[in-house]
Image (tube, one colour):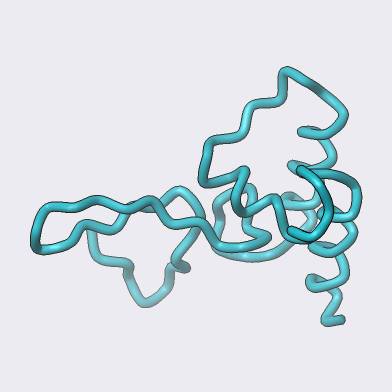
Length: 88
């Protein structure tokens, strides 16, 4: 599929190459996969760290680890996404 002019590239989308390799996109901070940083991404991180049963795909886990210097996905990642969202 070609991304239309009115759509964003988002976490979870796939890219196929001419040699038939397929790659899954992970946009840092775009945890919910809508192509934007918003409160849904922050909530996804908070749900993940507060509920062991809240599933995230591998691409979403990469996107959630916004503050990669901290160990694992934690509240620092949610705060960093919120900060970036607010333009800081």
